[in-house]
Length: 632
Ligand SMILES: [Zn+2]
Image 1 (cartoon, rainbow, N blue to C red):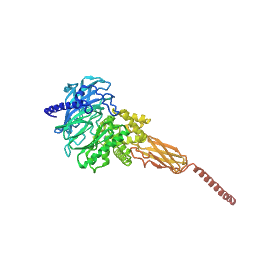
Image 2: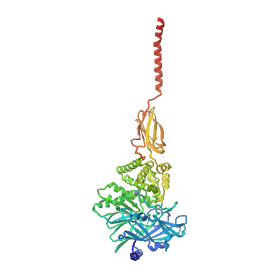
Image 3: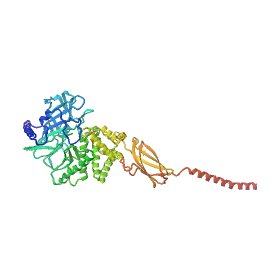
Image 4: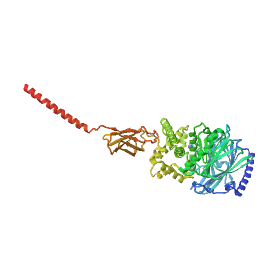
């Protein structure tokens, strides 16, 4: 909390700044930006023209956020005013607005958010008109908001930043840095289930928001560098540094500020990619190289899925583990920047987090309810990044690693249902079931789908998803329906067993032939609940090679094939080089055909031999009898 006198000084400063902004605008410098006055007087926010084809929830109306805030390092807090212009694009009247106030999840770590004052259409709300429960702020409107009507909410708030080596937090040593993520009141999404009240997720993501218009005037200490989701329009440096950001249609706003950041930039296709790393000789090489990683990732992803839509991308070092994604900004673990650390892992984290620019930012998803259409895609894409660069060995190694860690985990702990929400994963009390299932099993399931459809069709499906849902929100049912329609196949069986059910196939194979022409193949599945698998089958003899796809159903499947040429040796392969979440099945599902000894000729030979013995016996007995009789 700031002292009142400080707030008055800051208020006066913003009046001066506001006049400066108006002067810049009237002088014709730069593009027009919405000012505080326009944000409070405009009822409907028109979507700004975009250099892309994103489709917000409504093609012409987006909600808008206008921040005037200051980062105060003395109190490790950020405070100021947020003006939100919300338009009801639902077909029902609304009596309540719902915001997420995620910093409330950090109270036990020293973080918090306090709503100092709250106004609706300029009228101060009394305390009974709004309430915070856990991480949800509910505002009861005096009058119901009819469809297509707008309301302006003005929130004066203070967010306290926890001292944490985390995606939301600050550090003072060995570097000073502040990471402002999920830090302000953000509108919940109103969908077919009403207002989404998903809590903040420490192990997953909390990014289910509508694409909105964002603007910010941010004040920081004058020596600070700031990495932000938004591009800088201009900045004023006096006693402090005030940065005015451009107005951008985006899904969320994050920034990181530090006096210890060095930065390096490059541009690609109109996007400026900037790497922010701690200013240290040992970190400089990867710090600078990160921009090239970003450029390569944007180039590959834009070509594979659809264009990256924002003018900036910030790649920012942070003290947490792994990485974390925000629209237009990714956080990458500081310890991966050291020269001696694993280069491939560092690269993987960067391209993984940048892949999230597509899911869930350009393509919005509810990753709390449906985490499958988020992390598995980022894992798959980080390996596709290697394949697109023809780094086949690296891609195979990463694929095998994902596969093997899930295999090992599931053999020890069992298989988990991929189609589970974060509420289910959080209930375990440890993050391993979530990470192994959503990241690793999720990736293998996508890889199986790619193998089944072919990479070209798989990418075509993702492109149609992009064309249909860029800028708006999609759900699992939309994802599967596009995969089925684009591939011209009903894929219900695939998602039913891999997404909604648990259990892993455990196949074994035998093959035999009695005549060298007809081969009988028996496939046994030890996991009886596993019922449908279309698998490639090969029969190879010295004279021919038969290749086909067979459906393995239930616990035992018997198949019969007739060869063109009779043979006395043959090898059968099933699911060669396929991932099936138990093993690669390269060696176990290969068998030599057993040629059974023909049974039909044996009885004839026996009859002939038997008859011959009888004849010989009778021939030998008759003379002796005669002799006996003669003697008697
Ligand atoms: Zn991820």
